[in-house]
Amino acid sequence: MSLPAVARNPGSGESLDSAVSRARERTGGRVLSAETRQVDGRPTHFVRILTEDGKVRRLRVDAATGRFVAPGR
Image 1 (tube, one colour):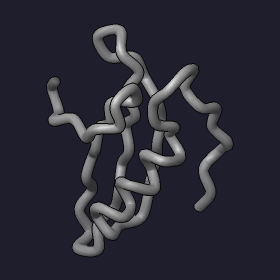
Image 2 (cartoon, one colour; image 1 turned 180 degrees about the vertical axis):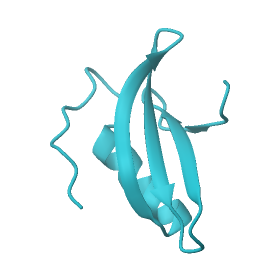
Image 3 (cartoon, rainbow, N blue to C red; image 1 turned 90 degrees about the vertical axis):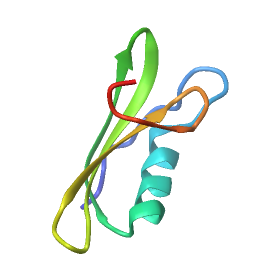
Image 4 (cartoon, helix red, strand yellow; image 1 turned 135 degrees about the vertical axis):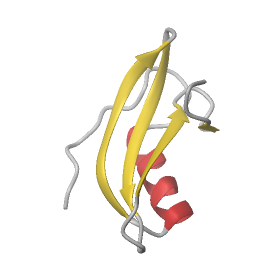
C-alpha cells in the first residue's frame, strides 16, 4: 500500500512520512492510514498500524517535536 505524497510541515519538525516510518519500525506492523490534523492548535500526525497479531494500534506524533504522544493529550 502506498501513501499519498505529503508536504513537510513549515519550519522545523517531523514530516508525516518520517512519523509513518518511525511508527512502522516501532510496531513492526503495516500502515493502514496516516494523516496530519490540528489538535489544540498543534499539528499532530495520526498513524494507524495493523500489528502482526491482528490488532490495530493508533499512534499520535507531535509534528513539531517528533515525540510520540499519549492518546487524549
